[in-house]
Length: 264
Image 1 (cartoon, rainbow, N blue to C red):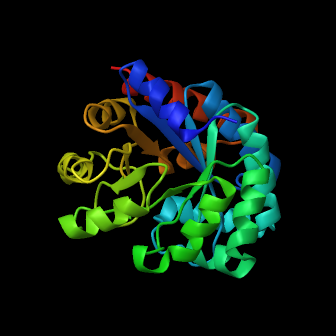
Image 2 (image 1 turned 120 degrees about the vertical axis):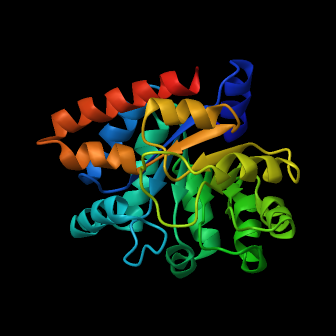
């Protein structure tokens, strides 16, 4: 199993940022998600976030919402998410689950942490879980050896950033802008300042997500962040592809472009 610490240590030794890719489980199909994520790893992704499809994705933009809707129509359940994690972890990438809190709460925090670790997962990203309510999940994650990742935003004051960073054990997710996910023409100018503010409160890696969609943007973010997170751009390649084979080629090409970007 590749750990998050090993990923960031390796990237640091190579004087580059880590490349983090996101795909929801069950999209474009249950098996297709594993094939697509594996192609992304083979082309340069160091970390893969597997999204747990949820019917009320408050943070997700239209591209991810479309993919999640298709995943839910495919009948994707938590058991399928765990099988996806297991399949992707075999590629050698550090594999996390990105999920809203409600599915974990309903499944049972200790049970979810235990089952995720057994599947080869190394941690979770929980975008809507606040530090004040994170105690049970931090305990369950610690018990199962999982890393925890929480989000800071451009609007977060220093006191809040410190509190969020204190809950993280994997890395800190710096949302580059206020709003929903999605590739954009340019990365928010607030991202670099947010990374700098966050690094004042933690020695953990700080990764930037929301808005990155091409190699030039990846290079820009990699100049000041420890990791570059890309989701919607990968999903868009799969949504636009006429068939799965073409989609795999498309995500592989994008991962190669982004991997070159984080190495500039």
